[in-house]
Image (cartoon, rainbow, N blue to C red; front, side, top):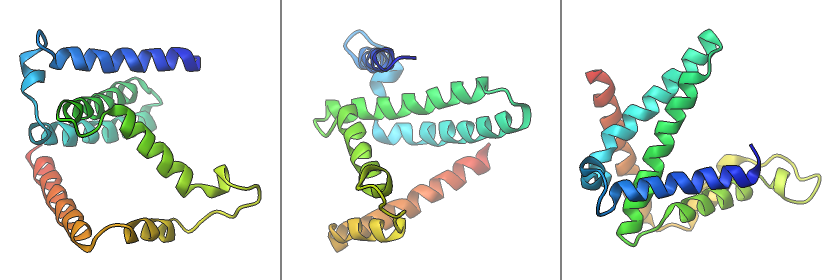
Length: 156
Protein backbone atom coordinates (compact mmCIF):
# COMPACT_ATOMS: atom_id res chain seq x y z
CA UNK A 1 0.00 0.00 0.00
CA UNK A 2 1.37 3.42 -0.85
CA UNK A 3 2.02 5.97 1.88
CA UNK A 4 -0.82 8.16 0.60
CA UNK A 5 -3.30 5.28 0.72
CA UNK A 6 -2.14 4.35 4.24
CA UNK A 7 -2.68 7.91 5.43
CA UNK A 8 -6.09 8.03 3.74
CA UNK A 9 -7.13 4.71 5.29
CA UNK A 10 -6.03 5.86 8.75
CA UNK A 11 -7.80 9.23 8.43
CA UNK A 12 -10.96 7.45 7.28
CA UNK A 13 -10.78 5.15 10.30
CA UNK A 14 -10.29 8.08 12.71
CA UNK A 15 -13.34 9.73 11.11
CA UNK A 16 -15.37 6.52 11.55
CA UNK A 17 -14.59 6.43 15.27
CA UNK A 18 -15.46 10.14 15.63
CA UNK A 19 -18.78 9.50 13.85
CA UNK A 20 -19.55 6.54 16.13
CA UNK A 21 -19.09 8.90 19.11
CA UNK A 22 -20.91 11.78 17.41
CA UNK A 23 -24.43 13.10 17.83
CA UNK A 24 -26.02 10.46 15.58
CA UNK A 25 -23.51 7.77 16.47
CA UNK A 26 -23.74 4.41 18.18
CA UNK A 27 -25.20 4.48 21.72
CA UNK A 28 -22.60 1.98 22.98
CA UNK A 29 -19.65 3.92 21.55
CA UNK A 30 -21.02 7.24 22.80
CA UNK A 31 -21.28 6.04 26.40
CA UNK A 32 -17.74 4.67 26.61
CA UNK A 33 -15.19 6.27 28.93
CA UNK A 34 -11.53 5.69 29.73
CA UNK A 35 -12.64 3.51 32.64
CA UNK A 36 -15.28 1.53 30.77
CA UNK A 37 -12.81 0.67 28.01
CA UNK A 38 -10.13 -0.76 30.31
CA UNK A 39 -11.54 -4.32 30.18
CA UNK A 40 -11.94 -3.99 26.40
CA UNK A 41 -8.29 -2.97 26.05
CA UNK A 42 -7.15 -5.95 28.12
CA UNK A 43 -9.36 -8.27 26.10
CA UNK A 44 -8.16 -6.97 22.73
CA UNK A 45 -4.50 -7.11 23.75
CA UNK A 46 -4.99 -10.68 24.95
CA UNK A 47 -6.65 -11.62 21.68
CA UNK A 48 -3.77 -10.01 19.75
CA UNK A 49 -1.29 -12.12 21.72
CA UNK A 50 -3.36 -15.19 20.89
CA UNK A 51 -3.35 -14.06 17.25
CA UNK A 52 0.44 -14.05 17.28
CA UNK A 53 0.46 -17.56 18.72
CA UNK A 54 -2.10 -18.72 16.17
CA UNK A 55 0.01 -17.29 13.35
CA UNK A 56 3.14 -18.99 14.75
CA UNK A 57 1.31 -22.32 14.95
CA UNK A 58 -0.54 -22.20 11.62
CA UNK A 59 1.17 -19.62 9.41
CA UNK A 60 -2.24 -17.99 8.89
CA UNK A 61 -2.08 -14.25 9.64
CA UNK A 62 -5.79 -13.50 9.11
CA UNK A 63 -6.70 -13.61 12.81
CA UNK A 64 -3.63 -11.57 13.80
CA UNK A 65 -4.57 -8.86 11.28
CA UNK A 66 -8.12 -8.72 12.67
CA UNK A 67 -6.95 -8.57 16.29
CA UNK A 68 -4.42 -5.83 15.58
CA UNK A 69 -7.30 -3.88 14.04
CA UNK A 70 -9.23 -4.30 17.27
CA UNK A 71 -6.24 -3.02 19.29
CA UNK A 72 -5.96 -0.05 16.93
CA UNK A 73 -9.67 0.62 17.41
CA UNK A 74 -9.12 0.83 21.16
CA UNK A 75 -6.24 3.29 20.73
CA UNK A 76 -8.22 5.49 18.34
CA UNK A 77 -11.38 5.32 20.47
CA UNK A 78 -9.49 6.27 23.65
CA UNK A 79 -7.78 9.08 21.74
CA UNK A 80 -11.17 10.33 20.51
CA UNK A 81 -12.46 10.43 24.08
CA UNK A 82 -9.34 12.38 25.08
CA UNK A 83 -9.94 14.76 22.18
CA UNK A 84 -13.50 15.37 23.33
CA UNK A 85 -12.15 16.20 26.79
CA UNK A 86 -9.58 18.58 25.33
CA UNK A 87 -6.67 16.46 26.57
CA UNK A 88 -4.96 15.29 23.36
CA UNK A 89 -5.83 13.62 20.09
CA UNK A 90 -4.52 10.78 17.93
CA UNK A 91 -2.04 13.14 16.25
CA UNK A 92 -0.49 13.88 19.65
CA UNK A 93 -0.27 10.14 20.35
CA UNK A 94 1.48 9.52 17.03
CA UNK A 95 3.84 12.48 17.45
CA UNK A 96 4.72 11.40 20.97
CA UNK A 97 5.56 7.82 20.04
CA UNK A 98 7.47 8.99 16.95
CA UNK A 99 9.62 11.32 19.03
CA UNK A 100 10.22 8.55 21.58
CA UNK A 101 11.31 6.07 18.89
CA UNK A 102 13.73 8.60 17.39
CA UNK A 103 15.10 9.53 20.83
CA UNK A 104 15.57 5.89 21.82
CA UNK A 105 17.21 4.89 18.53
CA UNK A 106 20.09 7.33 17.98
CA UNK A 107 22.00 4.53 16.23
CA UNK A 108 19.33 4.61 13.51
CA UNK A 109 18.29 8.27 13.42
CA UNK A 110 21.47 9.96 14.68
CA UNK A 111 24.95 10.38 13.33
CA UNK A 112 26.33 7.47 11.28
CA UNK A 113 28.37 5.11 13.41
CA UNK A 114 26.45 5.80 16.62
CA UNK A 115 26.45 2.70 18.78
CA UNK A 116 23.31 0.91 19.91
CA UNK A 117 22.32 2.71 23.13
CA UNK A 118 21.63 1.40 26.58
CA UNK A 119 17.82 1.65 26.49
CA UNK A 120 17.53 1.47 30.26
CA UNK A 121 19.87 4.47 30.58
CA UNK A 122 17.74 6.43 28.09
CA UNK A 123 14.56 5.51 29.98
CA UNK A 124 16.15 6.55 33.28
CA UNK A 125 17.18 9.87 31.77
CA UNK A 126 13.60 10.44 30.60
CA UNK A 127 12.26 9.58 34.07
CA UNK A 128 14.59 12.12 35.72
CA UNK A 129 12.53 14.83 34.05
CA UNK A 130 9.44 13.71 36.00
CA UNK A 131 8.56 14.68 39.53
CA UNK A 132 8.87 12.12 42.30
CA UNK A 133 5.11 12.33 42.87
CA UNK A 134 4.39 11.56 39.23
CA UNK A 135 6.81 8.64 39.27
CA UNK A 136 5.14 7.20 42.39
CA UNK A 137 1.69 7.68 40.83
CA UNK A 138 2.86 5.89 37.67
CA UNK A 139 4.14 2.93 39.70
CA UNK A 140 0.86 2.69 41.62
CA UNK A 141 -1.16 2.91 38.40
CA UNK A 142 0.99 0.20 36.83
CA UNK A 143 0.44 -2.12 39.81
CA UNK A 144 -3.32 -1.50 39.68
CA UNK A 145 -3.40 -2.17 35.94
CA UNK A 146 -1.42 -5.37 36.36
CA UNK A 147 -3.94 -6.51 38.97
CA UNK A 148 -6.82 -5.74 36.60
CA UNK A 149 -5.16 -7.75 33.84
CA UNK A 150 -4.63 -10.73 36.10
CA UNK A 151 -8.27 -10.60 37.28
CA UNK A 152 -9.53 -10.28 33.71
CA UNK A 153 -7.47 -13.21 32.51
CA UNK A 154 -8.53 -15.42 35.41
CA UNK A 155 -12.18 -14.76 34.48
CA UNK A 156 -11.72 -16.05 30.92
